[in-house]
Image 1 (cartoon, one colour):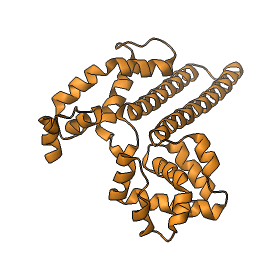
Image 2 (image 1 turned 90 degrees about the vertical axis):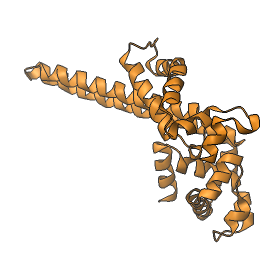
Image 3 (image 1 turned 45 degrees about the vertical axis):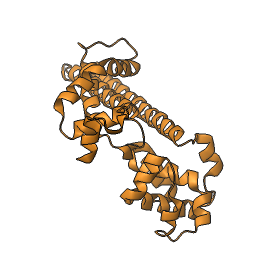
Length: 250
């Protein structure tokens, strides 16, 4: 409540950020929510257009999907996502639009096949259609992976990190990666520690040391890797989380 009052009355005369506005909306300010959605319609259209590879206006079904996704981003956003609202919204919009396109492609193919009499020629057409769907879904999955990696890379930069940092500082041995993962899991399960990480963009090494059976020296040595794993664990990263399970055998 104190937070809400300070935002409403601008205590301290600090300019409200977009994320501050989202907090107010999540407290139930529907008028502010509608105002924010109206303001960011150009952002929604631009994001949807980048997926569809064509100009999108408000009359397109894809724009409606993007609008719903943006509203979903407002309702689901938290600082624990490890990124700005717009970065999180962009990922969500692209994911929802890609899923919509895939669903539409499948419906059209099924309708076409159902209209056939299933003769030899039409059976061949059905096989070709099935193969087309399979190939399209592979492309969709690749697009999802690409969007996740792009979003993850953007969040890393907020912590002053890059992919080259991870390649250079990732633990070389499986047991070392496992220990780093234990620290990352502990970090994201402790609300106070997680808040320090995502608000101050710092790893709370001293606090972590007392909660895990890993030395301070080891935590410091693997700091960048631990931060990266924590970002993945709390974020909406479907494929990257699968990758973590594969690497660590989790």
